Length: 151
View 1 (cartoon, rainbow, N blue to C red):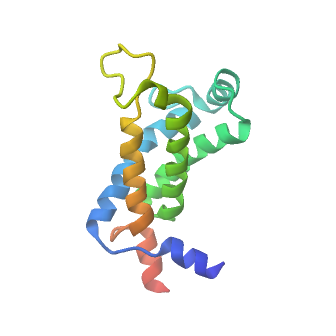
View 2: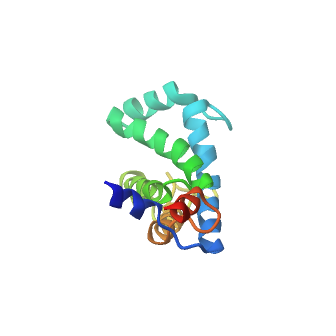
View 3: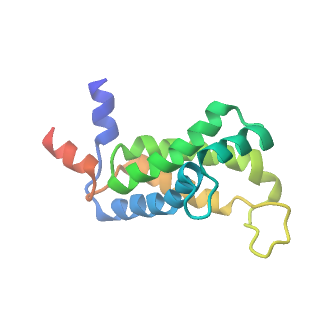
């Protein structure tokens, strides 16, 4: 267990990886805040759970996980705390999004409102940033880096 925690906290002290992590966290945070708290025009936890489980037919554990990953994962990424774990979680989540809702609509996002849904280009960008963090860690400006230095 101790080795797993060390591996999750290990990071390359590079500012570029911190920028990737901060970008990912800042982009995902409003989505999580919409789903959990109803901020930024969102519907909040209860309505989001209802939508995910009733309209989208997702199991409640998946719906709950999406909300938690987007909200707490984004905050953890912004802080640089267990970033590899959250990056892996986001990668899996967005692969699921591509497979279940975006693949049928092609590559491009629905910029002009002329498609039935969104393509997967945004999701690929999220996955790319997440994999960068998964491989390299949180970067120089992170809680993970501070903890790793003390061990």
